[in-house]
Amino acid sequence: MATPKPGATGATNIWTTTQAELDEAAERLHLDEGMHRVLRVPKRELTVNFPVTHEDGTVHVYTGYRVHHNVNRGPVSGGVRYVPNLDLDEVRALAMLNTWKAALVRIPFGGSAGGVRVNPRRLSELERQGLTRRYATEIGPLLGPASDIPAPDVNTGSQTMAWIMDTLSMHRGHTVAASVIGKPMAVGGTRGRRRATARGALRCIASAKGALDGTRVAVQGFGRVGMTLAEELHAAGAVIVAIGDDREGVMNASGIDVAAAVKWMREHDAIHGLVDTEPITKADLFATDCEVIALAGLQGEITDASAPTVRARLVAEVANGGVTPAADAILADRGVTVIPDIICTSGGTVLGYFEWVQDMQAFFWSQDEITAQLDRIMDEAMAGVRAMAEAEKVDLRAAAMMVAVGRVAEATTLRGLYP
Image 1 (cartoon, rainbow, N blue to C red):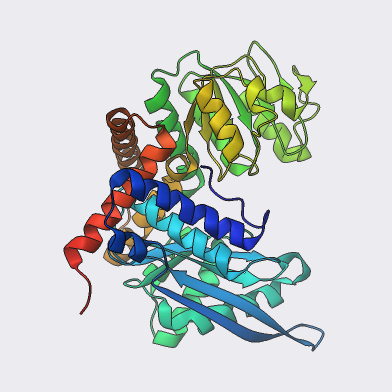
Image 2 (cartoon, one colour):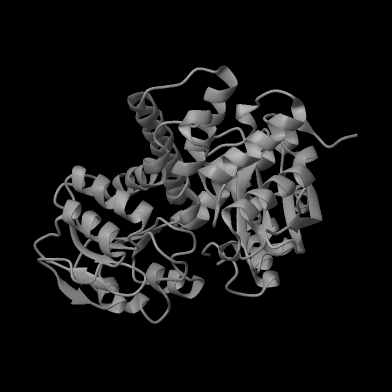
């Protein structure tokens, strides 16, 4: 079952879908009923309503959330998003998914999530900073290096994290760099963040496919992650034969010049017109004659309408929910392997942990050290998922959930239930 598409369906569907993923894994694991009940709900939830004074002097009241799903493997961590339709059920779902993702890559974190219901495009930079600092203050009692470490998510980034870190530091009277992850390097961020998600996806693809030299790949979604993944794949010897943005695509059966494609995309904010390529539709991209399709764009890219046309034997969800549940079933019936988002996107989770560790130690690693450790963790995670899939005769999505839920359940059992 694909990761739910935030904001695309009713909130109940998002939360219900995420719980259903847990229910399926619990049934396959023969999980104790009591443990299943514990894991099915968040540990704590906070809703805050707070005022922000805009530059024109008007006062607006915004609603924000922070949810902790499970703390039994360590402090929780998860993103902060600013979206107009955010609600509590969406945040619950994201927090639960972050618990599974951390467990899957053996990072000693639980899952959290949060954000503010706001359209950030309507805010000035000053208003955005004021909203961020007030939100951080409101949820501040939950935050800290040993309790909850926020990270960037939709419509937030390194500057947002710097504001949150500074706000928490002002409250405590000293700098607390490890209180957030995803910061600029100048204030305690880590090397390797730009490439982390793409690098993690590369290791997953290599684990599932084997040697990548000469492998023909189509990349759907050519933003930061998609561009970086194309560069990583090219460096590993793969041939990029098709690229799509959120509107259309281009192809060249002999191979696309990746450096030229990245430069063109940055200059034109569209892939259309790239030299030495021919235009194709998004639907054509999924039917491209290739061995791997990497989905690094929007959610729900491959649907039940496009799944029957897929010629690749491997599909990698490099963004959340790239394959719809209906398409997932069709691809499985056709023998197409899908690397699920829960592991394929977890390179960013690993890098966030690296940043937290470095801040706690006040000692920073080289790029080579970070890459080597990221590769090791991703390789071990994929090996564990593939072993579970083979042992239980299930697909990689079901296997990933079984591994993750099993690890969280084990930690919860060992700690026991208080009192």
